Structure formats: structure tokens, C-alpha cells
Picture 1 (cartoon, rainbow, N blue to C red):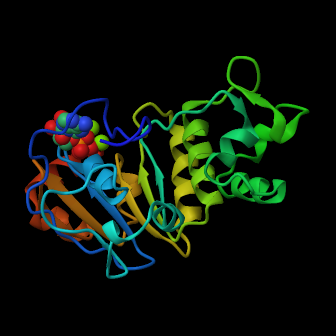
Picture 2 (picture 1 turned 90 degrees about the vertical axis):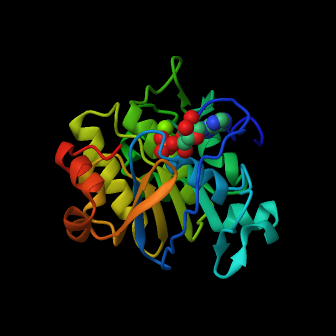
Length: 241
Ligand code: ADP
Ligand code: MG
Ligand code: MG
């Protein structure tokens, strides 16, 4: 396990085998969804790509290069990661956005807020980007916090984006806004999305179905509904976790 922001699902030492022979390819510029029951290993896959952990066997390659060969800075500039329930830090909208890219300009901040449809939060305070967030300042809903975290990741302009999309606590409108934000950032990017809702998944170029740390199906929505009983079950409930 890595630093304070590095636990994919709570604190703990990884002393069990979580993934067993997981193998799949994500074509450049495509959107791939990871789905499967809670505990299947979806977040762990993103944690491995981010190098919060290293696999005991096998390798993760980006453009043919093992991620272990990339230094921290190269990894961060290539791969953006938005964790499930990404926290909003005490401070202003600006300080939240600049976390990973301190030298970004105000214009760039406004651009990424626009990309995730969050310009409206700037209008809630006369202080704009300097508005404090949280109790003392601008209040953000769960969906807005999620989109602020996506905007923060976008500032780095990574060609690859990993999203642990949590829509479980979102109402219909916020869920739709999150989905639109994901659609907007999907352009010209490679996306790996842990998808919780069928609505996000049907638009994916490819879906990887996981169960107990194994890949049990890879394909499009219409292929998987036919070929993979677990996927059919999950899809019936509309919820893919
Ligand atoms: P998913 O995201 O599909 O719900 P996770 O990748 O979070 O699943 O977890 C897969 C398995 O790994 C679960 O059994 C979980 O309990 C275990 N796990 C996840 N993180 C840790 C950790 N830091 N230490 C120990 N076990 C963990
Ligand atoms: Mg989980
Ligand atoms: Mg998870």
C-alpha cells in the first residue's frame, strides 16, 4: 500500500490474492467499462495501474511500456485517476483544482470546470475560484464533488483517465450530469471506467466483466447479454456492482 490517498477501499494490508489471471487490452482512445459484483476486484485493477500496489505476477503496460518502468511524474502525467467518493479538501475551488497541477492558470481552471458542467458553482459565490468549499463557503452535492474531482484530473491533461464512478449516492439529475461529464471527457481520451449503472456501460466500446478476481466476459453490451449469465443478471438490475 502507498500513501494516505492510496487505499483503494479503506486501510489495510493486502495479504490475500485478489486477482487471478486478469488479462485484457484497452485500445487507445476507447472507453472500457469494468463491471462486476462488489469485491470482484475492480478498484484493485485501477490501484495496480496507478501503482498503489504492484502485482505479484504479470505486468500492466501502457503503450507497450511496463508501468513499473515509468517514474512517478511520467505515470501521473499519462494517467489520471478519480477515486470512488473522491474527497473535497478544505480550501477554495482553485486549491482543490490545483492539487495535481499547481501551475495551471485561471483560464485552464475555468475550462475544466466548463468541461464537467460545473461553471454554475462559481456563480454561487462572488469570490469565484477563490470561494471556499464546504461548510463555510460553497456547498457541493455528491455529484458535484465527483465532477470537481474529474475536473482536477483533467487539469493534468492525461491521455488516459481511470474513473471509479460512484453513482450510488446520486439522485437522477446528478447522475445524468456525471454521465454527461464522463461523455465530455471521453473525447480524445482512453477511459477505463468502473461503471455502476447500465446507462454508463451501454455506451462503452468494450465491457470487461469481473467476478471473484477473474475476467468472466469481454465484449459489448449486446454481446455480453447473450454470452455471460452474470452480466445478464447484473444488467437486469440496471446496477452493475
Ligand atoms: P471492487 O472494487 O470490485 O468492489 P475491490 O478491488 O475493492 O473490489 O476489492 C477486491 C477484494 O480485495 C475484496 O475482497 C476486498 O476485500 C479486497 N481488498 C481490497 N482492498 C484491500 C486492502 N487494502 N487490503 C486487503 N484486502 C483488500
Ligand atoms: Mg468495493
Ligand atoms: Mg471498488
